[in-house]
Length: 211
Image (cartoon, rainbow, N blue to C red; front, side, top):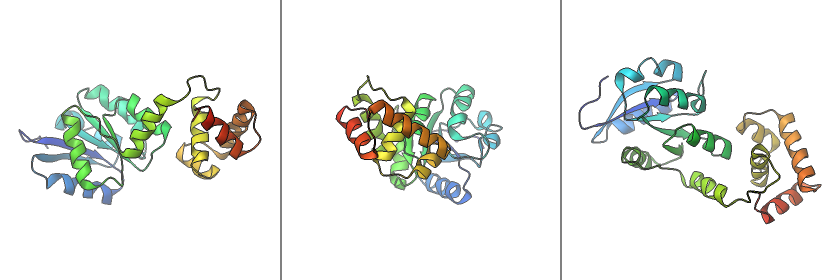
């Protein structure tokens, strides 16, 4: 579908058909907006993006085949001017920073109210970078950390998730790593911080602004 003049052309890549259709309905009923494409995967969308030339793309992270984070630079290479807004359930450092460094213009979680999603689309077209409140906090906190931390980026992320009370299984799932890798990171964190418990690791890291 070719976009109409004077309307913001929006495309969607989301594998859940119910969510995809609800986004399309929500956006298409707004004045000044038009949904020009709706796809379940990057592989399906890439065949059409150059033809439809959307202004804004709503992109899910968890996709079959090439995921949203991997798809970002590929899409930006095809359409450098395209504004890409990540819409996902994930709100962790690794995903957020990979998205932003790979070219995302905004990052919203899927529990964002519909009115905010519409506002975000307008905002990116006008040069803004909309983010959910939790994501904005992650970004701000990253600039406030002690740059001399002995922890690697991944170890920092694991410890932040531990501090949030998440189980090792959940941390593994959210960071796309296995349980043994999480255990290894935690062991290395304890060694680097010279502590022997989760509570001491969190306390030491917070006192020194490592997280």
